[in-house]
Length: 78
Image (cartoon, rainbow, N blue to C red; front, side, top):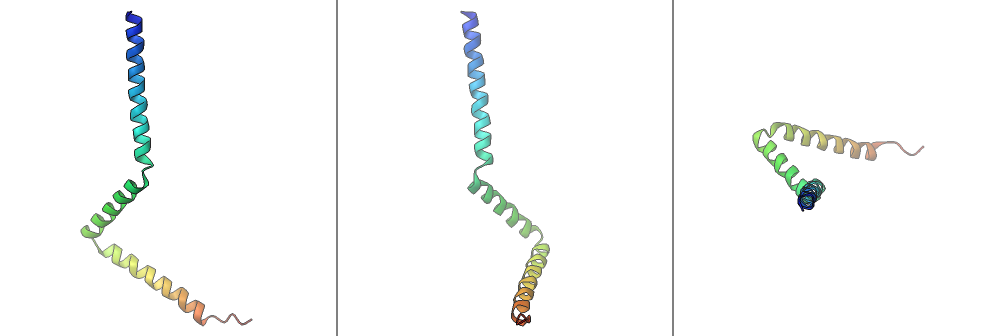
């Protein structure tokens, strides 16, 4: 009877460990939760120091305007 109790307790521990592992995997692949966490981190970063965000947005805007200007004014009639 003691061996059976040991086996049952080992099975229970293994089952609990598997459940924890599956919960961790599910949490890691929960895309909406990860996106929410990323949004919160970005918002906190912007609130702490908006300068890099403003510089980055300005750089992206300049790059987009450059591509648009290149597309408009390039001589592709060859």
